[in-house]
Image (cartoon, rainbow, N blue to C red; front, side, top):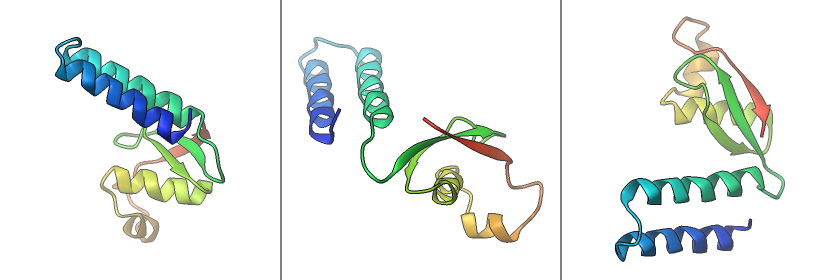
Length: 101
């Protein structure tokens, strides 16, 4: 699914919600399904990575051009400064692996 198709599908879900044809939880499911489909079919130089490990990074999914960049984006998405994490080898930094989605 390309970006335009994904946006159209999200727009259709929002329209159904606005028209009372779908409730909030149904709309959330539809939008999440669109995003999952878009992410798993992501095309281009970047790849989709999922973090597997300690909270709060476990399960986070990011798009990045490389594994090191994905690691930085996962940390940033979890509210952890990647620069501080690299310079601090402490218990505050969660341990995790990355897998391509």
